[in-house]
Length: 297
Length: 278
Image (cartoon, rainbow over all chains, first blue to last red; front, side, top):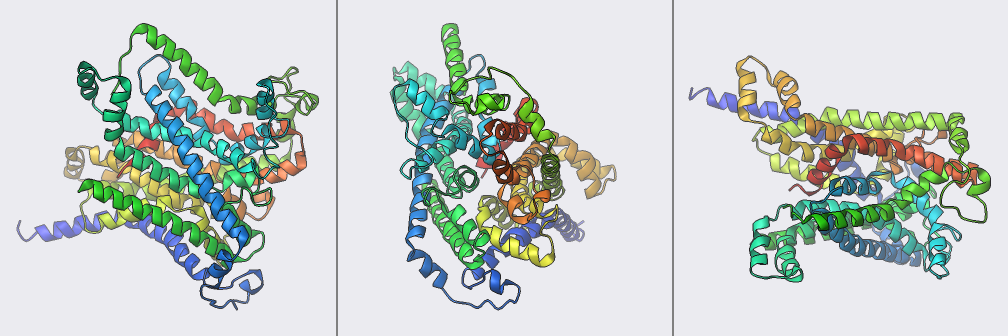
């Protein structure tokens, strides 16, 4: 038996790799390699003219220097952060409220909780179409506002309001996502904790601040972190709803990178914008890991 | 944790929940109702909240258009190919990750976790150039290959706990009966994690169906594009005929709604597991 053991081990290892490696190699080929390629591309000057000849050369950090000297890019960067942070705040607060409400047991709570998720699962392209329709000057939103005696703004043609319209549409998608993850965090809190707090005479505000929030800390971190990652890379919604306009007021890194690569065919510039997008996500990701580790200590 | 409420409060809460649903889902109602309005009403000066005259005209206009039918077919091809690649690679990997303890597992896991979160923008330009070199542009496989790169990690992260929870005795018994690892995987393990597999089937289908950015970038010709990627084409064709545009949108949302009606519990379970695990 003693001698057979290593061969059994080796056999099991072979089996494990047989199942795992195809997916792992696939990811390396379709994600890992393009990622590296993207980084290299961002240091070159590849565009549609030198694509076929392969005459593109390394120009160092020039693409990045150009970007940060470009006012439009700085606006796009600002838009991306304003968009992401606003969405995170609103969808988190409303999503949390929904989670607190819908985790309770009453008739229809499960059914409606599920129905709300449709806005999260439907194609973002259709959400964009819908946004374009309801935020028209004489569309649904302004009609509803009119009934309240408010004259609505020109949402999609006024640069002050266009980003807000996009944020509202995106929150509609993000709220169910936040609700779903927060409900699963809430259900992991044992009801004994609440019962003993109620016996001690704690009111709902005290229960929320002293029990729910502290016990939900890691779920809340996770939701905000994932929310950031998924919101910061937005593309579909803007591309269909406003195409980044008017005057770049709803342009974000995703759409801006796309514009460089696929309407101007300046591939290296598009790659550089994508690298900035990735850099921001990376910093936030590291920050999150740091917080997680601190919490564990 | 479930809080039990007194009967009176339960009814009050149910009423509030219905009101929330009405407000929250109103945009979807808006989409659908517009698709049944005749032209006159759809772009009349007065906004109506339901079709005063009901017509299937906008739906017929879409369904009679050969480009629409091709796009619809392409959407299904996109969705099924994404699903196929995801299942083929994701399910075995989830099994390997869940049932075996070998060196490198944590590296694999980290790779899959990170790759699930990478933005499409990061790989879009390089993949376009790579696909153009290998002649994959305008091939039905191009976008599913890219979409699957994010659904495979999702499948692995979601399915791994399912495989872990299968009792060890089950595959030991299969091994004793003379099943090799591959047979045991197909005949014993897969049936044991059926619920998880259905989740992956549904979500990867939707990933392929909902995709916009890969499908419009890799498919240069309109005849190769799925519905999502052809929205601009139809929008410029329909102009301000919002009823036709919304019929287009409704058809695009329909599979999502149908899947929700019949598969809700799989979708909800999967989304939670895949997003927060580890």
